Image 1: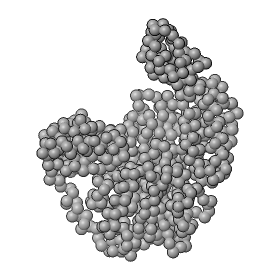
Image 2: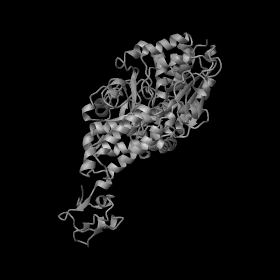
Image 3: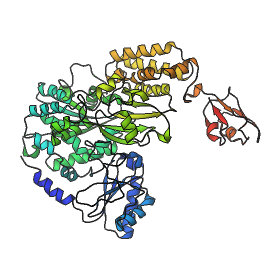
Image 4: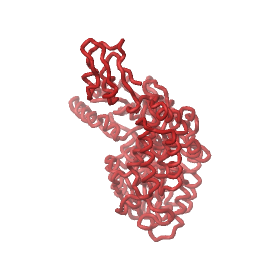
Length: 617
């Protein structure tokens, strides 16, 4: 079998020593949305105008989405410095002071990357000691934002495909045993043991088997898989190939949502490059193992995240779940034994065989090994990606890494697990984040989306929002989900409109129990979770909506009333001009009044008033 060692050594010599300045721009989806294309254009223009000899390269998201656009500047013999909040207007100063003058712009510098051969800049913290990364353990995301995802050579010099190389000299059953020993559990939802799943597919009879990668990440607020695909696509390919070798498959599919065009582009390039290097296709690394990977672009149906609906979609059928058993490991894609894991799971596989099962099993908790990548969204101060060991508490993730709540407001709840998860209150922030602990408190790991909510959030409205999503995404195949989500949503709409009854609480709970026990797939079985968790921890808000006809957070418009404080109103007429239904009367320099019979509680008057005279209760 051909060895990659000599190639890797040659590449390391090529890449580890730079002879001229190198500027790298973070161009993941978040960076591009923040203006990375404009920053890149400004860099090319300024470099040409000043006649500088500089390499300009691209990478992906390094995790600090709240600091996009990120730019890394590396000079020969000096450690690279990563900047945040770079705009085209800041490019010239960065070039003049750092690239030309070797004096980093301290107020924009986030951290420097340690390198043993270099003397570090004294006034810039290292990445490991910086506020955002100090409490993180970057393993799966270690290459994201650090290498070019469009250059296979940069994956190889960071020991890429080393795990595959080791596996090809091992018996397939030994590979499965190693995955079992590592304790890896699926990162896509329920946390089923990966090794056991592989064993089922390995033992299934069939002359043809398939590997499937579920990249149909559709949870609101989740972007972990997208970031891995955009930042380290070869890790996913390598993990899929290892799984293929283990179960006896020679073909794989990546099912990726159409809303991820950059991920699709980089996956296609990675597949092409892997084939050119003999790392994908026939007789990989001159071994007897052959494997090919195809990309299937999904049409955006959330239900296709369910593995059997996903298989139907790949086959060209409508994305609807199948009855189980038989399970996909026995009868999956085109009726053949199939193993299906998500993006982060396969990225972990490549990591395990590169660093070893014992190393991996030493991270995390007894029943939840390794690290987990979370997306931090909502009312959190620092939005982005965070990778932490299993067992880290929610409080550490939200406050130590995420910087707490925006504008120093009070924390109210965190939604974990997307539409399938639950909303947890402040007194649950100190539980360890692992599969079993979250289930006990009415939530679930899910794919890893964290949506943080502050004191201004109405939890009844949050439950209504997530159920609206689930109801719209239900495929309609089974009655419990199709009718259950519809009826539950009708009840929540009544409650938030001020028309609820106390009996509605019992109706919601009864419908939820029926859906959880009788729905065909995971979408219907978990859709009630946001409702059940908010009823469990925020029942007082439901009662306030029903009994008092009041939304304590001032969110549900139908339960709000607006009035004008006569002592503060100066008669400027701004509120009257902003009102879309002419519900406000009054003349210039005289106190105005709101007619509650006409008012539609849109809040336009409050936004228009500069004297805090409009009161909302």
